Length: 585
Image (cartoon, rainbow, N blue to C red; front, top):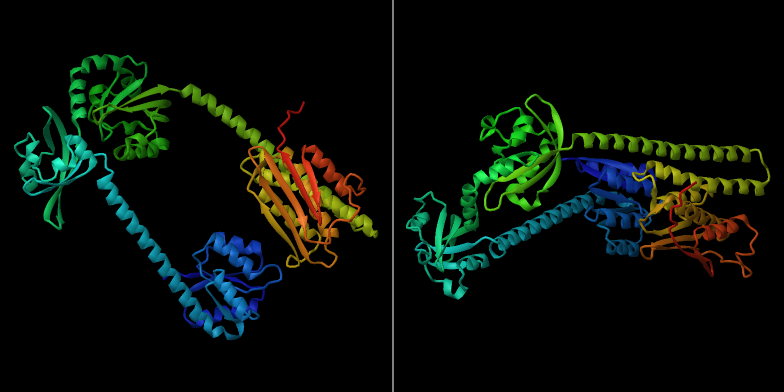
């Protein structure tokens, strides 16, 4: 049995060790990781991928209820057990209603092993039950679709040839209604005299010729013996190959004319069979490959000329062709190598020949074009590296400025000046964080606003030395990619408003700062910053405020051409559109 991964949310190492000791007493084969903060908890959910979570209900910087909500959102199938010394009966019941698996009191840890074993057993049974239900539904759907929705004719016959059932494709093939077909005998339509031998397994022919309305139709057929309520019956699964056979005859009759066209396409061309064996090549392909037509025809597969880097992709196309030819791209790029190992890049056009199982491919030499494209890609890659380096250096330079302000603050005794220095540092950090996120992002022109806001608010709470369990940040930020021209002022606005709340809104040291950000439509956005603190002064007027922070907010709102609405007790709402990039001159 593999090791059970146990994630322990506990700020007291000794308590975690006591829980682990109880599990060891039971002989459980497990490994554990202990975490204390929200960030550590989320990180371990994604990387450690635990099989079980043991959580205290209250920690200095996090709490069990929040952990439960996160776990149920990200990994709803993982058992979650509260292990606490303070949890009450009513609270425990409430936690069970919210999705917790069980709870154990720290003063009665002997019950922990039993709770863990029961939770793991129930989790495994739930997984197995869900898996079995999934397989059953898929199986039923597959076989129901096979008969009812198949585009190929399917007949169910008794041993004497009488029809028991038929799908819609079969009725269409025979051009009959169901009431006229059921109970009639297949020999009424079949031209072949050997069709009854198909049921006995004495004939290896797999085509039946039907005469329907005076016209012949050819069906490629397979027969399966099944046991039904009415006794042994036969499933006849067929494919109408009438058009295919007609096309084969037409193709054969016009082979010389086709060969002339084939030879004069101006590209490397070949015809291949179902198994990718080459059946015909033109002169251009002979010249490139270094082989004669005689050496290639039905002796080599065209995949032998595919370069190693593209071989797996081409083999995948070949496998898919047998399952669903329409899923294969008709145009693609591929590198071919000749007899001497010389490689060239080609643009391939592939097509199946109607009515046959053959295919035709034409290869246009694009070696020179690919060389030019590679030079352009290399140049673009170098420019991207340069831009990333610029963002990195800008971030580093801003960090140096922030550090210098810190050193300077250490030499100042005036608390007012110290606070001013710290506010400047926060603004610098807000801008530096933009460049850090861009440097780390796959898209160096746009930034993930939610990720940015979460990092910035976390830094602000740390900067103001607030206890996250007393002053909380409630973030409801949509996952939006935003250009740097709009993200910088937007980030600075959030920085100023959140800083203002942390400084003035909570004289008693308790409360919540809320940040809401949503896309209203393709162009407009809405940003709201509020708190549940003491509220704005009665004489508050942002246009007449002499504080630098609110002046900055007002100027930044104008910069992004936004509309600012202020409501009491303390709510700032800004609606704006993303700025269009303006070329610097």
